[in-house]
Image (cartoon, rainbow, N blue to C red):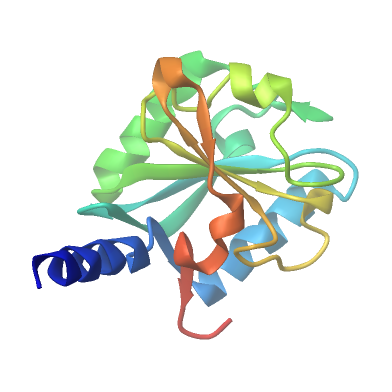
Length: 171
């Protein structure tokens, strides 16, 4: 009896997604990534929202080049001294940075540069990678989903798909 109760509790915990977003907003974010990258260079941004327990809800997108206009150089070279603009936006909208997203030219695997330079070097931060310069709308299971663990490196959650990142509403 006790073991089945524990098993049910663990199962319920596993089913709770770590990240959620309205499907329509996720499509808009990818269209904006595609537009800003022009189909031939990386683009990205901060995903702003609310933290609700272990789940983070994406409510807004702040492109990297709105914060640092010179960061899109084929690859992303972001000037961290400009983060005050991110924090000001978060304060104004009463949101947090819940993740970041950027595109890659091919697949969604993390590069060594990605691994060595997390956009938010804080344990628990989530980083998403959309393949093929976001040439179409990609859903969970088709994108890279990584969690920064500080000195312990990164956890790859990409294979968890929809159980890790849930899109709600119309998609």
